[in-house]
Image (cartoon, rainbow, N blue to C red):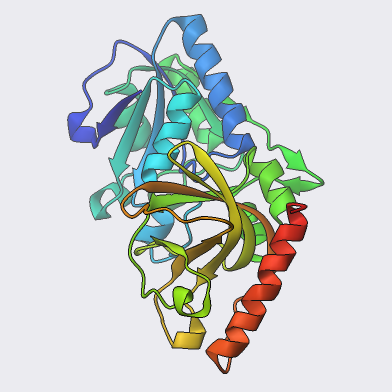
Length: 304
């Protein structure tokens, strides 16, 4: 999949099939849209183009929210689904003031020479979110391209959306989260050195930084970790570690029967089941006792 960073790097297309959105998490609803996009592009023998934004409009307007996937994870998921081109538009002050009709004309028509467009049934665009499928449909008739909207997918009566998945993660509903994502929720990153407090109470951990990203998930979980093609079982804590008065969100995993030097390697932590919320303990002794209980809960989950 070809990555195009910014409209200034976008060359005029002879034709294209386009979809637009944030695509955070690349959930089963997104997969439905992308499947139709790729199918239509092959039918018309034109490249499929997916447009997303950096930062997201929500972040730009100060409505900071947790991301379900990092950029690398999202890009790889889109590539796996067969998208030809991923256009990332820089969402800045100038772009935020672009009228919906001008976005259609200047980007979709002048640059991408759009022949077919698919959007979700709730998608809005342009200044003040004034553009919607109705406007796109009217412009398609005038300019000779096709506009198609896709209906939402339901899971157990819930509409599949990135915001709904964040809600589910917040309350630890990993089963329904997995149904909506089409895969178990995971976080990937490079294993870094931590404060090494865990090893002083018999529970050494591998650590992954969350960096500036707001985590959509907090608590203690049963988890598996993939490192260099191997899969290990363990207990994951993701939070601020209130017992040592830390304010930095960190992902720590205690792995069963594990004794390897893995610093600097990439790890993928897959969340299986929530055990409990993060809480502050009066002493390391009390924390150790709780971790022992958490480990037993996780081993029972794995039938170990």
